[in-house]
Image 1: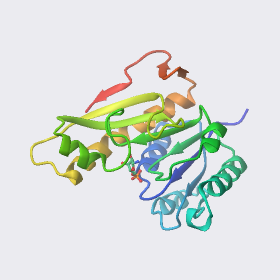
Image 2: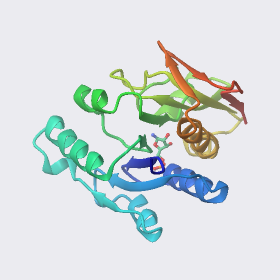
Image 3: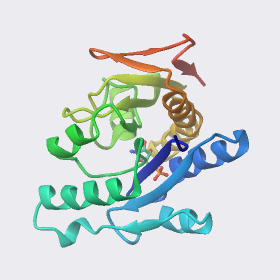
Image 4: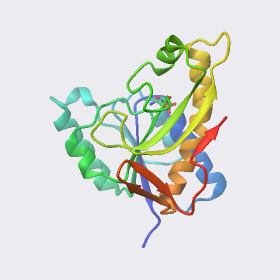
Length: 211
Ligand code: GRF
């Protein structure tokens, strides 16, 4: 049996993918980064992947008549690359139930909030608006609910006096870059078990990071 392989989907900067890849290099994970796919060719993260010799390309969602057609093209490409794990890293498309069922249990996402608080977009603005004192990020398995799947791990950061959406986003992004590689490694090591809407880690260790 070959090394497990990861296919990553991005829409933009790709800093989460870079954090996962660089951690894997540093810690010498036995893993293959089989490809990075973006839903638009302007995604900056494609450049980093290409610089590392990883197959990287765009499937333009705008060239597809509907979500089903786009997702069908994505499924075909991901299956052609071969993926034990599909990592959504700043992939800003809502996926169809058919796509989610096809990769069920091997499809994970990172969301810039402490779910179930602030699902959806503009999480930092909404956190400031709500006056919360703690904010953060969540890595979760993807199910058919938007930002609702079983939670793998979370990291919290303080909301500081004078914060605006940019300073808060930057603090959360630093936390994302710490927890996403951990979650991916737990998956690759076969340590994650989904029980209903819970994710159990074996052997147990904290799935919450206060940063
Ligand atoms: C991250 O904050 C992620 O949580 C959100 O989109 C942003 C993507 O950042 N879904 P990057 O492309 O990984 O740098």
